[in-house]
Amino acid sequence: MKRFFIQYTWLLLLLVFVSCTKESEDPCKSRTLMMYMFADDGGSISSSLKKNIEDVVDNWSDAYDGNVVIYLDATSGNPQLIGVRSDGKGGFTREIIKEYEEMDSTDPETFVQVVNEMKTLYPAESYGLVWGSHADAWVSQHGFSYDVEGGRVRRSVPADGLSSVNWVHSRSFGVDGGNHMDVADMAEALDRAFPEGLDFLLWDACYMSSIEVLYALRDEVRYVVASCTETPIEGYPYGDILPYLWGKGEQLVDGLKRVCDLYHEHYAAMSSSFGTAALVNMAGMDAFYAVCGDVLSGRFDEVSTLRKDEVYRYPLIDYTNPIFYDLGDYLVRMSRSDEESSRVKEALDDIVLYKICVNPFYNRGEIPADKFSGVNVFVPSAAWNYGNYYQTLSWFRVYGE
Image 1 (spheres, rainbow, N blue to C red):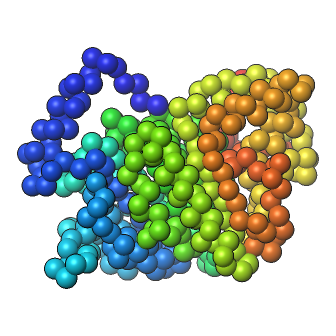
Image 2: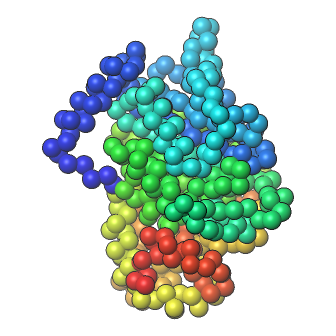
Image 3: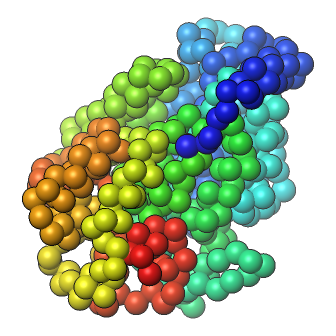
């Protein structure tokens, strides 16, 4: 978490008060909900992102002690900054606040610029973020290659572009003109955009409940809601979850649990559907990492010889290159005693406050309750070859290499 010091508390409160009184005609709200939605990918999820925004506008209420502001970069047209205003008839309508020139929405500079504009327009005591796009946790499964460009790790599309990728069912983070946002870039962008800390991050994208991603962002956000599997392209039922995004403390925790439940209820009611959601408490991440280090340190060579079927692997809907395994099952498998296994389970319970999955998962069968921790992990088996990139992730140090 952001390390807050008592001597700065009054200064921060003063800055919030000043920003609200000087830059906004409205009284300072408790929270601004920021939605950063983009997918310049040829159109596969653009319509779903637009529908998500319509759900927010149609279900907005003056009863919320908050604001909402949305950045949308869809396939057609330039990126837009969107607000919600009264339609004069007792309802609400979308308002185009700003239209940008075409820019790379995966670039940390773009993200920080947009968030700072959102803060200027809608200052608040705290902030929540919805990040919606395609995603593959820390790595793409579609043959993307990695190179260093200007000090950043960038992904480039295969020679045949995205034509070989089947996006029928799932949204999977950040496609804009073939560029993706790297995990280290995410952490840097969040740190710069929210130096005061982010109350929660809701990832409306595939696979982002990944220990490699979560650990990288451990100092940037208090709570994360994300999926360890693919997610349906329609996204979250925003009209239903809006009332639960404004609490503080335990009220926020309870609200985010309800968000997970509503997501589950929405898709469980459909035939041949799927979806998982987990609420992660990032404050416990360092202690969890320490326990994992006790289990995994010095065992990288041993791990690399594991067979794929020795650890529970999450089912796939669209993809054919499965690399996401259950974190809890992996750690229990690697534990050398019942005592060590118990420590792992207790530490995992401290970070995963809530988890839920749609069963059966599409037509791929049940996700076993005893194999479902709500967080995925890459098992660096010799069967997978991602070069040295995985070793650049901060989580990799858990192996002591």
